[in-house]
Structure formats: structure tokens, C-alpha cells
Length: 195
Length: 61
Image 1 (cartoon, each protein chain N blue to C red):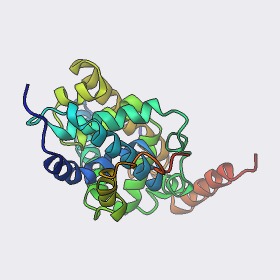
Image 2: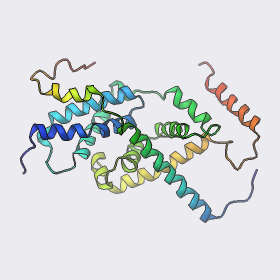
Image 3: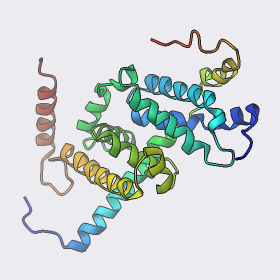
Image 4: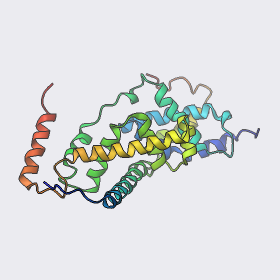
């Protein structure tokens, strides 16, 4: 078994991964502050577990595993209990009325938040995390085939959610502008009903 | 209201370009965070972790 890394070298490499830890944490938690809390907790845990890291192996995958396990095991922690923020919910309604890139990203974030945890993490890790299927499977503690099917289901679900929220705003529709507005106002009224 | 179903190849092409777009947006969501400058608290975290009493006062709530 190889010698554990020097502390300084380990620190340097872990620090270089912080942007990724923050990005992955943000995909698991909806709130940026809570995501950073999770990322910091994961960093500390990784530091304390540094002797178990095999030098030369993928530290990103190793750190992601720690972060992910922390997320799931710490059920009582606040970064698990985040409701969807109103800005994101609203953006989904207007995303096709004003199809700017920003709105579309918010709509995607909304769709992601509606996915099951295991589908969302598989989709993020495979689609954006820069990791191979095998690495993602290891991080998530399951078979490669399972990851592939989670990604596939997640993709289908995202499309469906985005399209459901777009119902009536399809460019092929003959819907007049004022009908779109009325429809939108109805949805807002529905959402803002007390209780 | 349109009644005619589009041909299957168009469906698949549509699906693929939709998925490609979602993939791009996923990466943008992720990269947007990953490209942020690292907040100071992260950089201090490991420095403080060196201290013998790092476990205390770690903000556990």
C-alpha cells in the first residue's frame, strides 16, 4: 500500500477541489448558504480521513463520496430541509414568456429539485461532474447499470417537468398573447392562494 | 390544435436536441458555481484544521 500523502500536498489538492465540492453540494441543496455548509463539513471530514485516501487515485471522486454520504446521513441537518425558493418557482411560470437563458436555467433548477435524490445526483454527476460512469457508480454505491438507468429516468423526468410547466406556451400553439397572460395570472393566483 | 403526429425520426431528433440542451444547461448550472471565486471561509477551514483543538467550536448546531 502506498504511503499516505504529505499533509501539505493533500491540503493543496483538496483545496483545488473546493469549487467542485461547492457545485456538487449546491446541486444537492437548493440554498447556496446551506450548500456551502455541507461543502465545508465535507472538507473537514475529508481532511480528518486523509490517511484513508489512496494517493494517485481520483480525489474528486473520493471527496464527492464523502460529501454525498454526509448529505444522506445527516438527515436532521438544515441543509436537507430546504423548500423550493419562490424565485425558482416563479421563474418556471414565466420561463417561456421571457425565454432568456437565465430563466431557463432557473426552470431547470426547479425541475431538478423535483427529482428523486438518487436521480438528481446521478444526472448531475454524470452530466456535469466530469466523472466516468464507473466513478459515479462507486460514489453512489451501486452498479453502473443502475446509474445509467437513473440518468435515463432523470433526463426523461426533467423533460416532462419542463414541458408540463410550459403547457400552453409551446411555440407551435396558436395561443394568443393575451390568453398566455391570462393563463399565467391564473397559475399565479393558484400558487398564491392562502393556505 | 394540431392532430397530425410528427414522424418518429423527427421525434428522436427533437428528443436528442432537447437532451443536448439540457446537458448544456446542467453543465452551466454546475460550472456557474464551480467558477465562483472560493470564499475565504473555505480557505481558512484547512488552516484552522491544523490546530489541535479544531474540533471544538466548529459551529455544530
